[in-house]
Length: 244
Image (cartoon, rainbow, N blue to C red):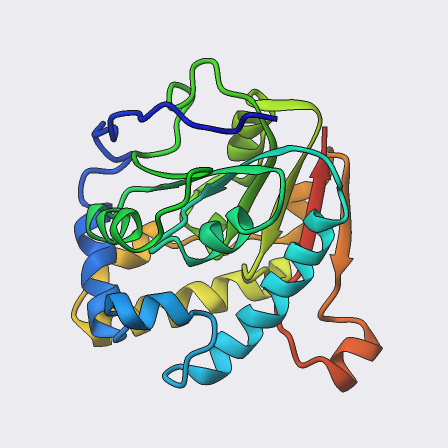
């Protein structure tokens, strides 16, 4: 199959919330998560923030193995791709076209500079009902990004509109909380960003529960709360797939 891509101008629509991009960039800088081109090329194998990257290496490995077993052409969208390392890994699978979407222009520019593959593109835009007018995707991935959307239900309904028949949504590397724990987690979040000197960021970080997937056709493919995973895996994040 010819998977060549017609070059498309990078979109520059306004972010969903005007100040989110600036706040997010400031947080990334404070946390020392702005990587050089050379560092980006080796992710997720990285010595800085090594515990976090070991977790993401395992979760991305599970996802890549799952997608590789599809054995058919896949159009994949990663929502909130950041610097694009995971999108680039998915584009390394055979029979794929991958689009990475993010509202951090600096990271999108870096991703376009570092990762050059004929079946991969990066788009600077927010994710709204109008982001993709006619595009359909077989796989939509949220990797460490769903927490920046205020409503799980609303964003999943939005994604379902652009899913192909039998399409799937995958959520990985995302914290979920029991309803009784969400308020305490929100308080910790506010303190964290206040200590950072960026208190406004707490208004853009949402503490979701797995119960918010009720009503959707979802399965838990990795459950960090199971006894086996608590004893041996040490990975704190769910892997959830929602099928159309």
